[in-house]
Length: 336
Image 1 (cartoon, rainbow, N blue to C red):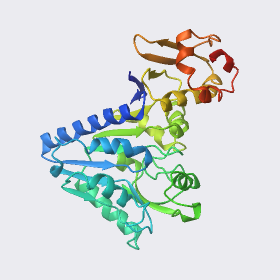
Image 2: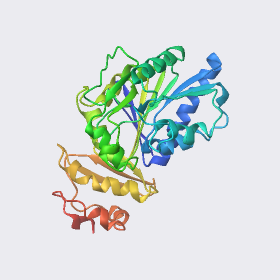
Image 3: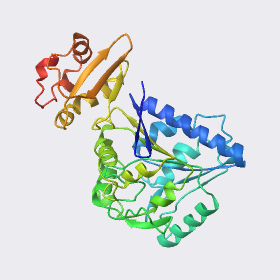
Image 4: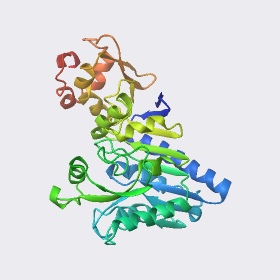
């Protein structure tokens, strides 16, 4: 079951797991490319890198009914000084995971090792001006960034389309945590990035944001103020954008979270781990299950059922490790 909500001007879709999220987002992306090709005979797309994009990109490149020979592709950022052969290079990421699988008309890469990053930013901006984007598929960083527009350098009215930026420590730590670099000292301190106006000028914007570690920036983007303190919050002013979440990345939101009965352990466990934070919010949740319909719903309500129905006990009982992480006022024994 999928839930759709609108937050300001942004459409938000929540899926039970990353597989359903990726399937839906890839289908929407494929339709956007087909539409552009039908209207103009060509399509221009910008894609994001990162671990959170892997399932989506793997799904997108399976669409053999797209005339990929009419599609020109771009990516969002690259480290300054990093050669394209480096395992953490975003150019290498795109070559191996995307360009190797579909016959693009062209894939224009950012070159991080030219020795003149500012000139490279100007070159890429010129390419984007001559190839207006039909589709931009982005993610949200753990610090709320879009591309490498970290909070200190994000500008919703940036006069540039591509620029060189200093990376804040949170962005650099994320790269180590994802396994791209061994230590923080190994992560470059600067990057070339497409700016927020450059990203969001696309005719269609899809933000693909699965995984539990993205729950805090997702909450900040949707529940907090629209501010460069969380650059992704600016998505709420984009009526042409859709934010794709799974149960894990949506687990801190105040909107309903739905998991199908067939959802994998990871999705249900993520919801359970989020329970203390949800209980600490202004309204405590309750759980409701309907096995005949095949869903489990976690919804903000005015009170919490200390003794849930037997059906919920049965569904949660196999995952004691998740249940024992509940450290809120709700007694874990209520779910034994």
